[in-house]
Length: 164
Image 1: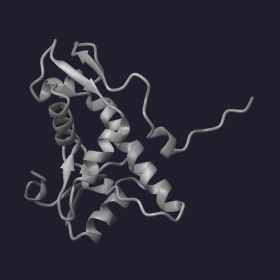
Image 2: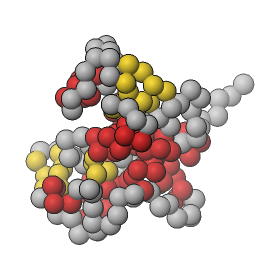
Image 3: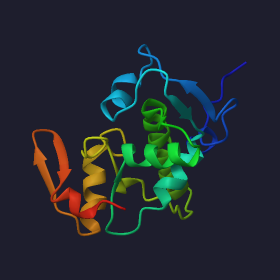
Image 4: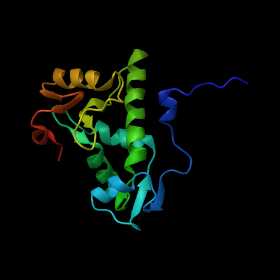
């Protein structure tokens, strides 16, 4: 039997067992990232479905930006948790971006401005469709100035554009 590869849109569907609440442990792949923002071993962390991250991405208006950390904080607050797993959130943000591009390729309109969501450190995301260069072009189209340092890109005066 041949395996049929799932589309990005299919990957956005509910995942069985999510949302899921875990107590943070040192061995978790997202431990360092969560510890860096103030979480400790034993704090409750939520793993959510991809569409919950996509909902947060859709809230970012024109000329505003967000990061995976900001989105995770909103989701954690919504679920009354200390944090949100940044590793699964990062994977699902990339899934949402690819699903949005897949929808566009089908000739439909996508309302997910994924390019307005930056990595935790404020850099553009090389794992988005077309890489950081494509994200750079989409941001420049909206009027943002992009700075390049080596192969990395950042929005100039980034802090001025964060969503509240």
